[in-house]
Length: 88
Image (cartoon, rainbow, N blue to C red; front, top):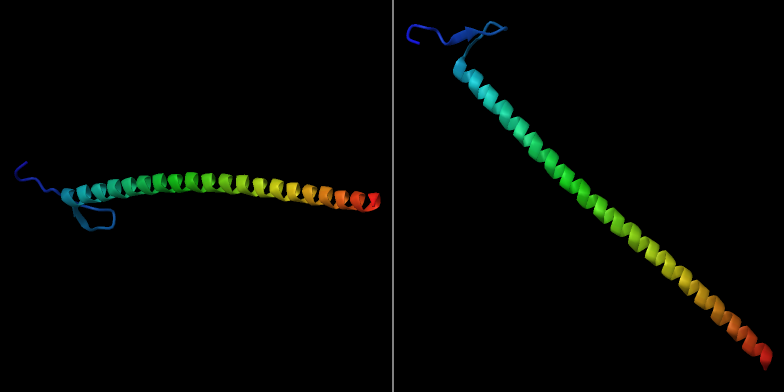
């Protein structure tokens, strides 16, 4: 409106215009959007890390099973050698 003063004194005595308040609100919105994007990216990274951890656990279990299988085979072979030697 013509003749009105768009500038208002702030709490600290400085004069802020409505335009500056609008910019601050835009900045606040941008910061909130950036936090939301960052939060989303962190969630994606967390999911990827969870998947990698699961795969690592699966590989570890398979390796332990393979190791146990190899031990069992070695034990059987050793037993066969002993039995074969006794038969001679």
